[in-house]
Amino acid sequence: MTTTSLKDQVSPEEWQLRVDLAAAYRLVALYGWDDLVFTHISVRIPGPEHHFLINPYGMMFEEITASSLVKIDLNGEKVQDSPYPVNPAGFTIHSAIHQAREDALCVMHTHSLNGVAVSAQRDGVLPLSQQSTLILASLGYHDYEGIALNEEEKPRLVANLADNTFLMLRNHGLLTVGSNPADAFLAMYFFEAACMIQVRALAGNRDLTPINPSIVSGVKEAAEIATKGLFGGLAWPGLLRKLDRQNPGYAD
Image (cartoon, rainbow, N blue to C red; front, side):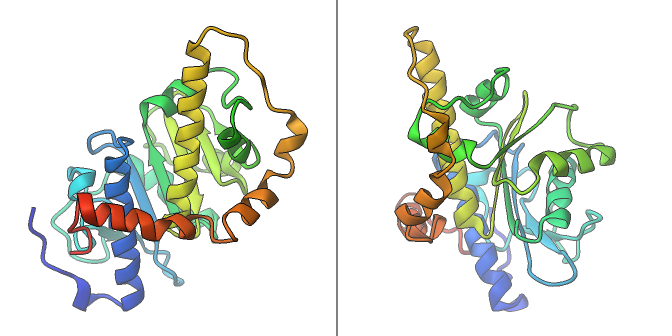
């Protein structure tokens, strides 16, 4: 799918965000977390306007490029010409969080099979793996209210996310926030891994060994040390190299 390059029509800062966001979309597809065209990742462009970038609705995640991303405002109106529409449910969820959380420059939402499976379990994420401890240290839950088209849902969504990195949308899927696409993606990687491990562990039909709750309390500090304070930035260059080998063209 051919799109005219916007590289010379936007600031260098916005272009880099576009490249990283397009890469995040393609990595979500590469790891199998996409749901055809029906989920979304957004990045807020720094500045008082609260403009943000989101996927062109109808384009497969593996096809998305930096130039095809759509720039909209908090009212869902395009602020730059684009031939592509925007998912209205994506706008509702993402605009609510971008407006409420200055630190949440990137918001990632998936409908992965493992994530939806755990979101349907009454107890949610269980302390069964090292990955789960990272999630449990910064996790909120939001009850299902139907397809996210209702503006009245926004304050409840924001309140349930609070200042957490992870939000489980019950009966719906997973959501992460980060200061950039790299952080939001790595958070989703751990979230998805914790859910996959939980589904497999429960399917094993054996007694499980839960992790001591006291361990969860220190996991944020331990994660900082383990990732050298870079979190997603530590893995991101390698992920981009992987993407360059398997699905190049996202930076177009």
